[in-house]
Length: 387
Image (tube, rainbow, N blue to C red; front, side, top):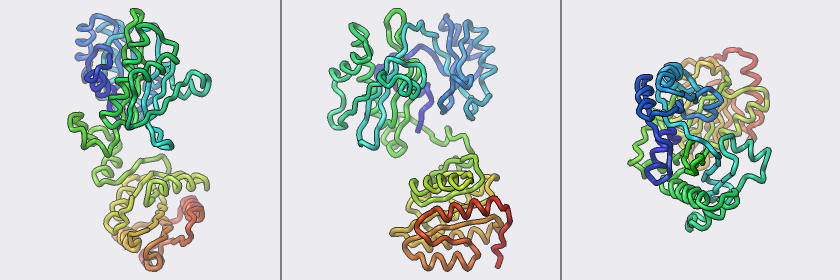
């Protein structure tokens, strides 16, 4: 669960990481008041859960309270990176001398947290890694030992800092790791970490993503996921406990497992189609769950064909087949549905689907199913399941 910038900064500050002075506002008048109280130029930052906000026009410099109010009127209520702007963070404009990059994330391939640091902050770290890989410092951390202050100093020394700044930045890095660890984060990032002309450090940009499965351990963060899901279909899926992401294609997809669902999307693309969504049933291949999954998929009006890719290990997938047929009949569906189903009770599942007129793929590989659904979607013919 990604936090808004102002929420991330509040946790950073609570744990000892210096941040710019400022407040979050919801009206232009409040923005003007904050600018007046700070008595200096301010940055107006749209609070949206998306990257590339600055390039999309979501960050404005206001030189005085009048500009703060004027620019706030333009930002509030607009869409930045597909997200409606409901709040702005109004904070002091810092006197910048240098910008650095610090982050802690988790490398699942190695099963360890990794610290990434660079003396080149303020821009996309991927761009730095591409153009100047020698400026990217990566250090893996043992989860049981954590990071010691001397290890943080060694990393910061590699960034070329010395003296008082070495101590301040290494303290910030050490604290950032503690925040990552304390809140079960997936990523904790400061970009940029500003060094001001009077040699102070401040986290001007903050990203904090928490592990959804660990949110119950942090009631103090008081996150309400339903308040930050913009898409109505994704919100409905979240209420049902179904992992779902809307995409921009027209072929609805359902997979039993995240990997299978993603592979299905990739193969649809490979054969010339575009998926309308990602949806993972997980291990819940029951009649009721499959019906709910189909209901979610069909909430997207762009869907004109559906590919279902189920593998039942322990689950009797015949239950999933019953759910598919029941949904098709009750909804009087007329769009093509292709089902690739393998596993426990597969013969029974194939029989139920075929008797209902559903296109069934019985091989293990998904290629044939993906190719078939793309062909049917392109033909655009309706299907009669009423026999």
